[in-house]
Image 1 (cartoon, rainbow, N blue to C red):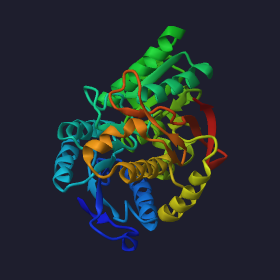
Image 2 (cartoon, rainbow, N blue to C red):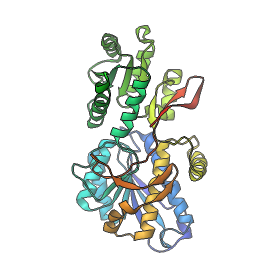
Image 3 (cartoon, helix red, strand yellow):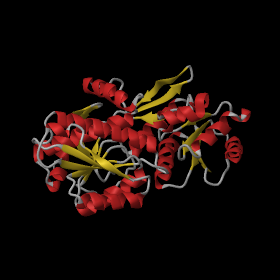
Image 4 (cartoon, one colour):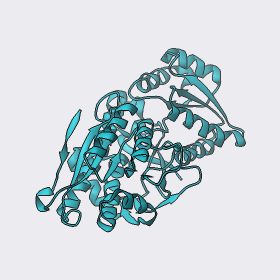
Length: 370
């Protein structure tokens, strides 16, 4: 699916547009709801840049491509966008897809500012071409492991599907918990039916079950099966990848979807910019924005500042990552080299563990910060 370029606000500027390629999952099997949130943030920021005069008087334009959670489709989109002359790439939600896009962008010498994917190894080797807004998985999931340990959980089961992303998450949890006497038991969500998984969970004697699986399948049926099994009434369900953040989770699970902790990347209080953007995103989306929409907005805020300051040459953009200092919706964004991370990384991303309040389902409770 090819989405027409967005030119919001472009009528106030002139000259040839400065084009940014936007990679987002908009169709299944991609997590389309997350993709729409990323895109809403990207589009809002582009409109504001153009209302403010664009990039040295030239309009900023998004050229949107749907990755549909397909790494090969994403790599092909990077090739196409590079031929179309985009100044940089933005977006992507799915980590495995972002890795394919980042690898291709690195090979082509095309700057890529990743909005939402967290897999530590976005590229096999260190690269100057790729930077990231979202925190690396090793940092976020370590915060989640700290939360579990503080809540008294020592024996934790993970219902996992096969994926580099899920395997990496399970390894991070194990590495964080094992030195403190914790145990992680892996249950194969690809081989076990929800009822068989419940039996295995009982046998595991775990006090918490983490969903390292896709949404809505098989996450939703697993939650429903666990919630209905009286043997598992005391088991806490967690979803570090953030499935409960989105409205579809609430629509499909109702009360069963409450009290399931997950990670989100918001501060205790949004900046004044963040508060204004939240209002605009709510109007654009017709619902409360998720942190993913803020990630999209912040991506354009960084790229616009880079393009204004250093021009549209791709090599100059890539060379500018360590000099970026931009006030975003969730804090001041600066990019550094982080040990073990192959891309330029915003190291100060705020991290929370939250859940949906069973007494008020659209309200999120902050359980832990990191």
